[in-house]
Image 1 (cartoon, helix red, strand yellow):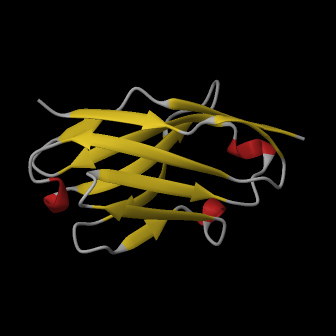
Image 2 (image 1 turned 45 degrees about the vertical axis):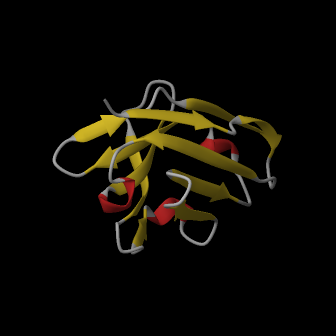
Image 3 (image 1 turned 135 degrees about the vertical axis):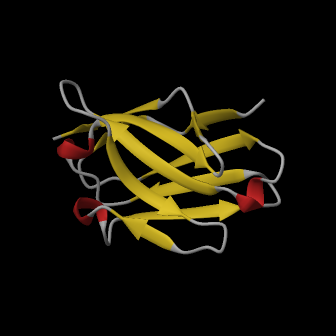
Amino acid sequence: QVQLVESGGGLVQAGGSLRLSCAASISGFNLYTMGWHRQAPGNQREWVATITSSGNTNYVDSVKGRFTISRDNAKNTVYLQMNSLKPEDTAVYYCSAHRYDDHWGQGTQVTISS
């Protein structure tokens, strides 16, 4: 059974930083593509970043240069370092795991005050 648990969310001022973590209970974690998504109130869930099993990364344009996704396969954990945060980054952030099917965490709230 796959379990993804996000942590690290919180309230910060604009311009600040947060690091989100996602601890995965997955056999063969290193073979999964891992992702971060977010959903703001009233909006659809939006893809934010992806890191493949080989370490290739991709980002939505709105976070390029500010967010960094990384993974530690020894710890079965994926991270999202978020810098230069803006009020529009406010959302619930979800971790995802993809290989033969898709798995999602419960989300962690990120709130950026102006």
